[in-house]
Image (tube, rainbow, N blue to C red; front, side, top):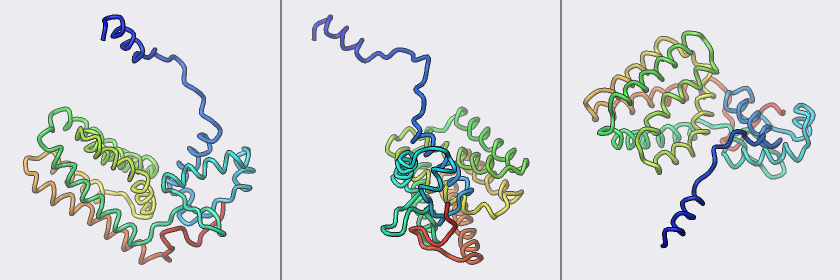
Length: 246
C-alpha cells in the first residue's frame, strides 16, 4: 500500500469527537421505561402488558409500544404467548436454580481466568463497589441496593479481559437482574453485608480454591432464598403465568 493510500485509510478510520448525542427514539424511551420497571420489580413477574393501556398511560402510539415490547422480548424480559398476550417473564424455582447453577459455573471460570491478573487497581475498585453496596443497604434503599449488587458482581467479568466471557455475562445480565428483583422480599441487612464481605475477602485473598468454594457457598445462599420464596408464594410458569395486567 502506498503512503497516500495508507494515509487515506488511517483518515477513514478516524472519527470526530461528537459534541452532541442523537435523541433517543420514542421506541427506545418506552423500552427503557418498561425495562427499568420490570427489572426493579415494580412491574411484577407474570404481569400482562396490554398495548392499548400502555399507550394511554405513556401517551405514545401503539406502534411505539409494540416495538418496545418486542425489544424486551428479544432481551428475554418479556414472553409472547400466542392467543394470550405478552407477559413479564416469571421465573419458577427450577428456572431460578438453573440460572444460579449456570452463573456458578461461569463465575468459577471467570475467577480462574482473572486470578493471575488481579492487582492493586482491581482490589481498590472491588472494595469501592463493596462499600457502595454497604452504603445502599444501610440507607435502606432497595433500588440502589439492587443496582449496587449487580455493579459489584459485574466487576470481575469486566476486569478478566476475556471478551467472550464478558459477552456471555452481558447476555445473562437481564435475567440475573430479574432474578435478584424477584427476591426483593428478603431483607438485605447485616447478614447480607457479611456474606458479600466474605466473598470480597476471598476474591482478594491468595487461595483460588478457597475463592471457588466461596462462589459455591455464596450462590447456594441465593438458591436457598429462592426455594424459601417459592415455597411461600404461589408458583407461576416460567413462560409467564397468572398475574396483573398492565
